Length: 156
Length: 476
Image (tube, rainbow over all chains, first blue to last red; front, side):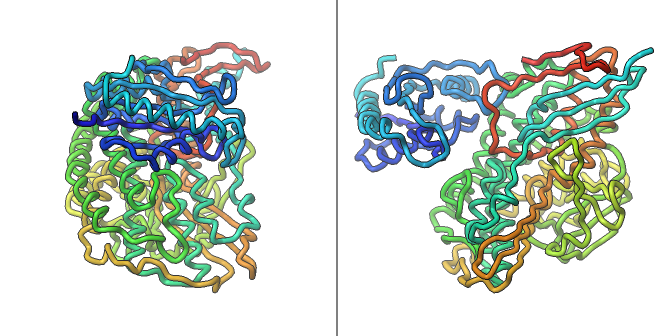
């Protein structure tokens, strides 16, 4: 079976402590022996240009920091195309990017969002102890999603 | 007796940074004055004091999330002057490539993402739909072209600099790594598509512009000076050359000016109602020394672009008005011509045998205590000026950024547009959108790295003399 193209989109601000946790996850994932066809992209924020690589993927995994919730909590779930109610490109969400990919490129890959709730969003390049502690679980969950995507459709 | 009133547009939308506009109405409800207020403050000149000069390129790149490369280049050139080195030819060419890739992606952002809703949907379009989504619906091919062209520039920056935002590849003395054969070939492979998009978009724009005759005659359509950097032979350059000033008649009023002596001919004035200073041409004083920079100004002062297709477009552009092209509406077309010029020039550089040279950095310790670096950023000429102590620590810094050099012209432009379109007794969104749209022609970059929290709604209020809201238009 040929591995499908999987795009990991890790985004956040690595200069705002836990907001940059997705960058750390992306770095750790890049050191793993991932299947062929997995591409990792890190970005400060989601922008319209990402609609193109998203449209070319079979599955997209969005990794982000969550601001509200219990610090260290990992949440995941499917993402559906959703038009933004905002006219501002600084506020694009994962659903908005999917919607763009669908409207401009007639492509709508399976998409999954996985987030880790942060504790500290102050200036700095280090992660809080709670996030550091949970980082291996986050990476494991992403790896499981990759394996699942390559064996059967994700439970969307 | 009727009251004097003020209309406030806060924030100005689809620009890079945060600003507001106030329109002052007289007793008859006619516009009597207009001001463009930049409401954010950065203070980079102060916060770099005491830091090692070698940090400046990376630190200064943080000024902006859209045009970090421009600051990197100007800052590195100022640091080259502190080292008193002549950087290797390949490094100079690679920096030129880097800067032109930046200009392509930044200009594409301005045209495709910020101004295309006005151009495609019209100035009077429903504000709720006058955004990117409206563009995606109306002309998906234009939207795809915008995405692809930005990606073209960003991928060059990423390949050269290691990352697309705040890359630290440009360093004092040159660049930190040579261009690989693999990256050179990969970039070259993307040139034909980018070129086709640039040509296609120019054709679309020229056809579209014919529907904006009233805007062309009233969008910053007034005499001013124009400033840009040219090579000795009068050809456009985005990296380095001599400063040239042209006037409204198309005459050259000053030529061969040394960019590192900017303080001899450029002055700056602060006004209490804005954090953005206004630059002026010293021989004419303030505010008569108003001048414009950026794509419109560059194309007005250069003799040629130096590439085949761009030169054909330049010849056509210079026929738009007699003398210099004065209307700021034409910034859009100038921007597209510069995109074309940069793509053609990038292809030439990529095919230059020297571009793969491994010798890309000159090493030295500080040999001068003062240095100036200047280059052409997407929005106009950019100057970085540093003074250091014997230990290499920055003691003083001055930055003159393009948007400040357009400040006088932007204020004059919104007054012209407001007087032409705004009637204070009946506020319509299209009137006020035109006031914003003329600002967008300049593509001001007030600070892209500062982001507002939450949703930025546009609210325009008519205030009476007691400060009470007399009328209000809210934008979702």
